[in-house]
Amino acid sequence: MKKIAVNTRLLLKGKMDGIGLFTYETFRIIVEQHPEIEFVFIFDRTPHPDFINQKNVSFKVLSPPTRHIYLFKYWYQVALKKLLKKIAPDIFIGSDGMIPLNATTKTLAIIHDLNFEHHPEHLPKNVFNYYKKWFPLFAEKANRIATVSEFSKTDITKTYSIAPSKIDVVYNGANKNFKPVTIEEAPIIQNKYTEGNPYFLFVGTLHPRKNLINLFRAFDQFKTKTQSSFKLLVVGKKMWWTKEMETAYNNLNHQTSIIFTDRVDKQELYQITASAYALTYVPIFEGFGIPLVEAMSCGVPIITSNVTSMPEVVEDAALLVDPFSINDITDAMIKIATDENLRNKLSEKSIQQAKKFSWEKTADLLWQSILKTIDA
Image (cartoon, rainbow, N blue to C red; front, side, top):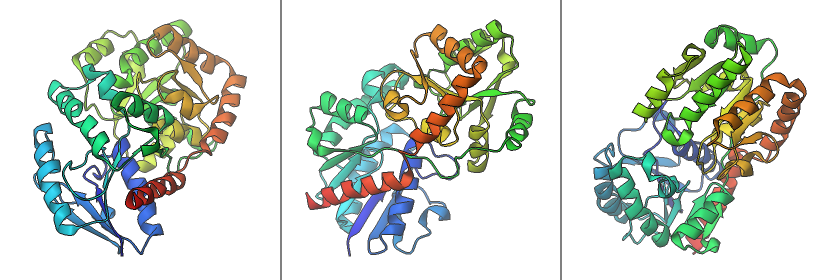
């Protein structure tokens, strides 16, 4: 029986962002499809029972919990290396791109993006220094690399001089529960969150690279120009809420039209996404952008950035804007809000484009990458 070890430290109940979601959704499927494989999930704290409920999954907890970047070196290069030697898996999968450099186990590093290489200003200095030092080594040492878009593959190839043949593209997906709502359902969500008004939606961690300052200012300008009842619903945790973001928000004329929900549970997110008038998702850098596929699956029109991976994900099913131009974002909001034909056209295209992505397809692609690594 083959044994596969997986870094699952980012499987945190109710707190999963992109990498945690990718890990959860893909291995949920892979574990089920391969009962003949023994999976060892490696956590840095006691896992929630939901993550270890399959017969062919066992788990190990490695201390200490990696709550601080200074603990990463010990956790990955000492404790993890020692554990892999003890359990002797056929492969270790670094779901966050990080691997033990001197272990004898074959490794597949899933490097989602290299945002820190291009925008170091968006990270605390100690976090940036760690990533800058270690990620080139992870990329070089890994037997194979998986990443989530052709954009990221090209970026890793150029930035770290890695052969393209070593990198597999494994696109993200969306949960099947992201689907259109009925005409009767949308007003229920609008009444709950936006006093019955239509809303633009942002979903994601409130982080500088998500470009919330420009989104806020564009929405403020949209409100001033149109005098409409639209709201902006912001779904996500203020993990990286900066002074600049706070100042920008406090200087808006239409502050009260921006509603923060913090994180919401999965069922609520399905309904909130499907009931949105449009998704306004304009990061300055993205390896993929899972909210794009989630919104497209619901037939929700999208305004997104014309940079990095986003045009690759949406193709012609969205209005592409310059994320550095507040006027560009505002103009797109006005178009969506005032042109019903355009909105309907984008909605139809979204549903078609979303069919190209699913977690089942992601799991299949990742499995192929796992097999290539084992056979390497």
